[in-house]
Length: 75
Image (tube, rainbow, N blue to C red; front, side, top):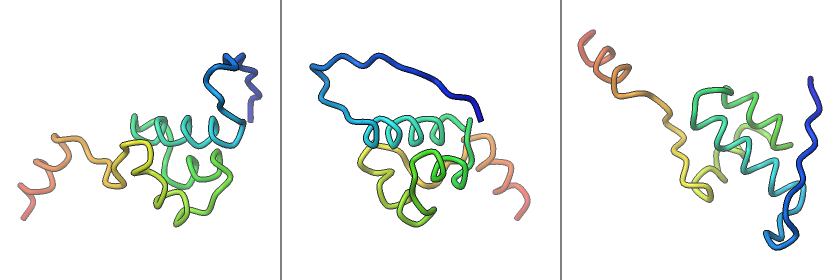
């Protein structure tokens, strides 16, 4: 795993835990990480991570419209 150092402005009042959770949620939303990978990055279990996704306006169901249509056509 790579380490990344970010300089966050003090005015944002973000701590490391909050920043990791936000980043994990947004990487999950974009499809860059699976639920398990994002949960690991956030330092949470999959269940706990899935429960905080709404705090970041991220849906647990992370399918593209094309995938939904493809699945619907299989029925």
